[in-house]
Length: 113
Image 1: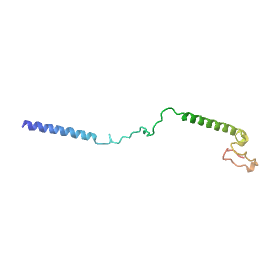
Image 2: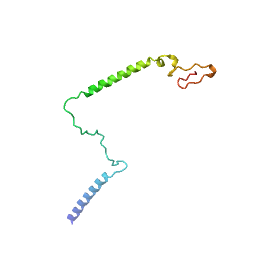
Image 3: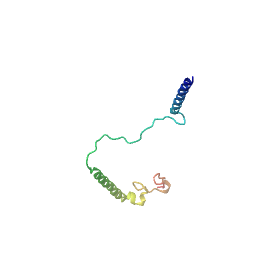
Image 4: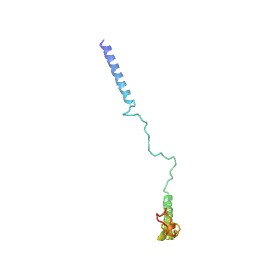
């Protein structure tokens, strides 16, 4: 009789342990079982060439040359009357001089011309 009781006790303890482990793996509102994503960069399948390449240096110098060219061009544009002469008020052409009764409000500079 003792042997049967002991075997039933072991079977029940194993069943209880199994039931508890199943409850922990179930998702709930506190610990949802969401899939995890890997945000690591993908490995490229291209073979890397052996030895250094100097394309990056040449591309850098090309970009610097283009930047300097655009800066020289913008400096040259600032010398035009549109930017250097105060009578233009930010307009491309100087505004017309109108009689005081015919002046209009300008949307660009906020002055009546």
